[in-house]
Image (cartoon, rainbow, N blue to C red; front, side, top):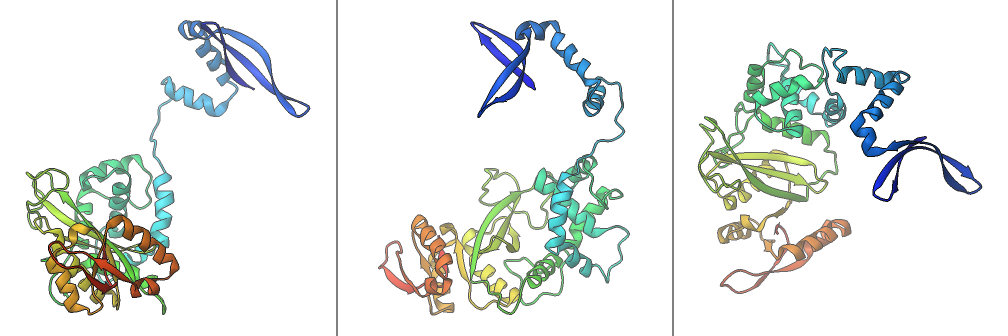
Length: 348
């Protein structure tokens, strides 16, 4: 049983109808016509009729009572975000890895829950840690009830705390506890046969509002069209399955072309990788970058047209990466002769 609007000329009439089956066909039987729809709305008779029926529907009666101010809500909180991403957080092992790093430390608050809150906030609303504290009030997130703003700040400081580095800094970025979390998550899904042969890499810029970015914030090419603000550069590396491997942060005046070689070198050191095929944006390639790859690896470096390579690259992933790596591709350099290289690292 449902309402149906029946048009007759320039007027519309509201009817109560019921679907019945006659043989193999379904027919609509009209129980009654309530009147012209425009008149029912203006006179308020339709609303009065609906409210009269609410007396026999307990769930709708509660909602109607709240809408009319007859009841007072103590608190209303959403539970969906934590139900979904809380499970993913645990299944990915992020909670376990963070807790393992906290065993030798003594905090007077739950650091893992503070990190989880900021991540969840960025997934749904984005914004600062101060905004995350206000956003938390509308959501039911277990373990975050006692967290305050300074706890979120201290959790971010925990992630960025510098540790004893393995080698030199990468473009001025030292190793920190965030790197240990990434390496711990990578080791969790690593087995005897795990190989990261194909890596997707790209960068973006994040700008600081207010007084932020005193250390890493620099003025540079701003992709958000805000050259007046300090910014930082963020690079993200994904495996062929779309799972994040690591992310790096550099001063905002770092050029994209300077990031590719250091990130490849650092990934090999951190994750003990032998061969990596890098898929990156053409804007990260310079003549110096190509020459550096040729010197470091005799198998060479290839840079081809983006659209053609995407099709070949995706097809090669399904056909087998070994065959793709052994193929030869044409690389065209501006104002220079064309040369052929065995495919090892790819830029699209």
